[in-house]
Length: 109
Length: 247
Image (cartoon, rainbow over all chains, first blue to last red; front, side, top):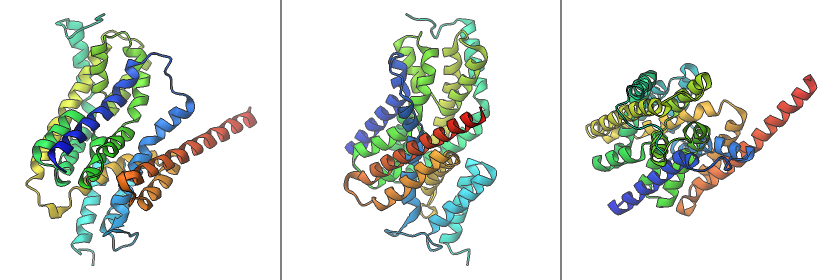
């Protein structure tokens, strides 16, 4: 990406994060989200996270690959299992990276 | 109207110090998360100055990490901004809860309080006002807690950014950013609406990834939200019915 484009990206991200944090502090009490809107706001982040990471994990060399041949898929499964066991974000990252490295360099047979 | 300022008022400073100390328990997590974000930014192809600029200005770990694969794939600017916006929508809910506690402060003060809000400091603040109500100099407490958090985060990020240049790209460290987002996503999936949202958003985004202008991402997010809201309404209905039957 070129520098002017990156500058635009930063402006866009600054605007996006600023609006979400500050917006409701500036408007009056009457702008209260309805229960349905609040439900959508509550679950939008998990949907965005899933939509962002799924292609990173499941697409290997251009195609969907849910098998042992996809190192990032195996790493993500191991990281998820570890997180569910220990509830540690750092542990989740470390285990995922170790498994990814092990699989990529063929240390697992 | 200025209710309180960065004055030499000792009571204000005392409250600021209390806020700083209240943020200590989150320290190790903030440091680790900051280093990972810094490393992932550089390993996704950003140069050191750009990575530092993004860290200082955007100050939103999940939104920054969300933007990385999209920047690497040269997606349109508005799609990247939208991804950051949606990832950060939880702050709309936070700030809606903070509003009544901050509405007496000046516009400038509210802008600052909003900008520095973080997940952990928000939760700590809400538990304090739940105990003590409208305590005096709550802006000082909030700025102390969030300011400490901000400083730790920036130091950790910049350490990660600089350290990343010494690490070979073959290590695949940009994947650490994806794993960090995964660790954020899993807890939300332990309840039915979140799980429904993820279970719909993920396959839609994967299958629609070839769409132009990054629209596959938008399709995944919208389909996921529809599924999560539907599931949320169903869960609420069931709970209400169960209550009527018990009562």
